[in-house]
Image 1 (cartoon, rainbow, N blue to C red):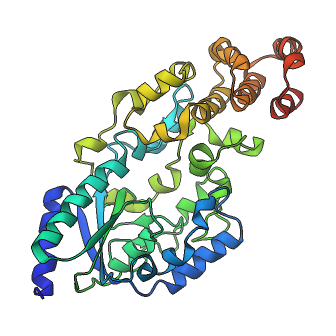
Image 2: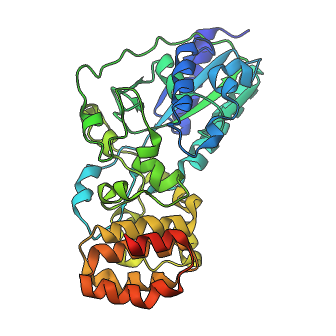
Length: 372
């Protein structure tokens, strides 16, 4: 067996050369409290329509159920710190605000490629078995990262780092190699509640609890339905995700600007005009967001989000473009087009549109929007 300290130092060196900014090690035990919290989250229905979270809960709760041979878990973080405060763009009503993490290449692809590189080197050097995970398997990455000392889970349930603030992508390598675990990080939130107070939809019923059903990130990315009216105005110009609770954290004063080229924001995704986005068809949507995580939600739900932002924009020049969506094949788009027009049109103009379009509508959700 290799010397644990030497092996660990070698892995850290290899991971840093691959582009990871922070590397810590933990063992696969001791997640019982986190598993109990997760079960409460599910029991309250706070996961919304993310039914996949209920699957394989036993594997989430105990890494050895996922892989009985695992002896150590290496947690790795990649910095994606923005060069400007994401909150600044919320006042620009004519642009679509995209979460910082989605402005560059899909981090799943970037992190997984680098994880495989490190894991392959680890296997070749120490003849140890390895498995890599990036947010796509039943792994409790944030509790494991906190247990490893990479950061701590703030009151918004996200990971916070003293060195990188809120801006870390996480990945993990499970291995049969025995490595000495790092000590956990202590909680440094203190009495601060900025992340809870800033949430525009009150998605935190209590500190360290998230009701995803009220979270704008969930609503704009995961939710495949008609977004409830109570959330549309608070969404503002957020069309994909929400960074508010991350961006407001005081620990971001220590954050560093990203240096991974793959995460550099594409110019067209920094401050995209709603007038341009609203006209995207299926083919143009796939072309614009090729290689981006945004592509995963598909065009219909993206345009749903854009129409809500358009309705919040107070920009009446968008009305002709929105009217075109009254004939869209997707009921979810037609419904949000009606809502957006109700926000921007005067009473007479909206009544004329209702007379011309409502009578030929058959979808109940669209009719509800006409009759609100």
